Length: 472
Image (tube, rainbow, N blue to C red):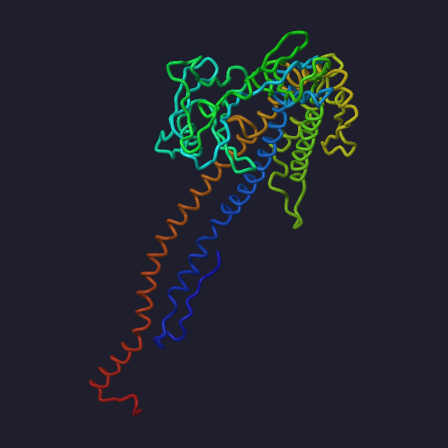
């Protein structure tokens, strides 16, 4: 603690001294005791930052591994191809799809039912209404002007759409300026067939649409079905399959494909295979993120540019992370062809810094020759995937008892103690500062009053003795 002195010149000058500066100097000396605590807090906070960063990187590595250990993850991905993309194109193959080759013959495509009126002038005034049904549904009637719409083609189209009768209505305009109502079923395939009511099929309420401006030769303004609703028909591996849509999802489990044309004399081969490209990408990401973790750990074993040790230098948790990761990666599992990371082309780098590298050719060969064993290596109990997942959980920050979580908790306890010490010291200093300021202000007032007191003494002395010091 440094010495503190009062600088007030001559005691009889009346100048006194700077109380604030003096108190601040004393407080600074009192706060010196906090420096070791604050230095330790700074060190612990730096450790926390380093630990949290490692925890984040280990979490990324855990996510990479989960993509491989999840039964519906990357190892379950499928890809597919069609031998004739003019007839059939593959849309997707999900995890439930089974690898294999399927033969498909497309007999006919699905159709969506549609209907239309005769062409009339768009501004003509219409009367009556339409009655129709979709598939085996009930008959429904929409009259001109329903919903306060105009008695025109556009008004009728709007009324039909407002009524939600299972069709989409629109006005189609021809090159000569005439127009017609078009109805398109909202349900594809045979179940979406549009049937227009007439005197034969629904005598109780036939379509009564008419043009009152220009009479039409056909009853009901010629409204009739112009395209039937049909289901797609195909042979899939010798089995007859129908689909209401040309986007087929019910023929091969987990596979969606698009029918583009029909040809009963052409057999299309659909091949479903394991998506090895996505798997190779996922494993490469795992290797990259593992090396990032090891690089971050290694960086804590050195000193910074100023020669100061890194926050985790020499700590037990750092050694624990290194040993846990390297031990888990070097283990052998079972006696099969794929029983270690080496069999997948993942090996330790010669630099001995804990990093690893991936041989893409070795991995590709393993996936093509022993795919089921690769899946077992990552997903079966007691094999690499579950074991390494457990290791990462024990090391990272995702578990309440993991190495990084426990280290952060211990730091937190120490920080709480140190912050408590600092807070108590500051409270004591605040009290001392208040008392000291009051005492020094009083002393300063006394010093500043000395010249006045001396003057008063001189005046009293002169009055008693008649001696005037000014006159000698």
